[in-house]
Image 1 (cartoon, rainbow, N blue to C red):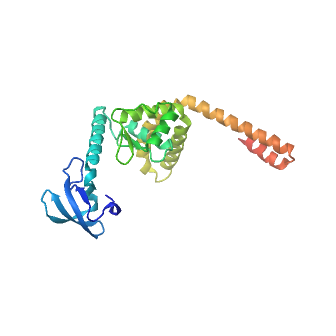
Image 2 (image 1 turned 90 degrees about the horizontal axis):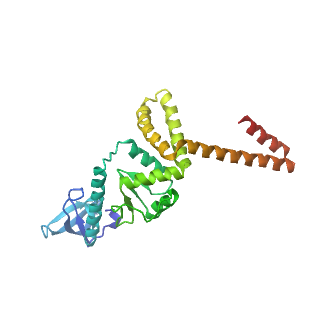
Image 3 (image 1 turned 90 degrees about the vertical axis):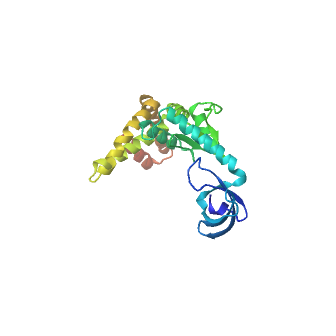
Length: 258
């Protein structure tokens, strides 16, 4: 727990081994000692024992322990589900999902270690943008005690594919910019450090291009460029009508150079 959330006199669930599933002990905090160290009295087990504890070993208020255990159980089921699907953190798919949800631009939404997590409203917005019913979700998806949504690997994969198909430019611009930047660094003197990373991500980027329908995305980008060119020519004619010939010529030269 955060130091600011711990109050002397209150009762807490303490876990000596900082791993989900380890037994919870019932303690009362007596006083703050210094830094992250607290003086605590045990209630169960070893009633009356007084020892020093660290902030990070206090998991939650004792009255909230059932919510903690429920969240841990749900997270464990998600991990087991992902394992059964053959999820691998080092796979191109895992890297691709991380790139896609980062490119979606929704604050707090991220794919990490096989789980898509973030604010429920952010997840809903991505679903809407991807053309997926917001009410559609995996039976294992849940919102934890802090109000954060968590969805398993297969739901994240379906959502990422749908999002890429609906908004290819959003992800392909990120992919192309990153690949160009890393390729330039790899080709420069001393760029060996990034070659391995570049090779690892190329497989992920290939998947993203496949999900986005790369040819369709290129056509969409070209259409956008053409619309922008028409806007520039409209601006040139408007400047000429307004007597701003110098500005009109400057824009015309810029367009013709391209």
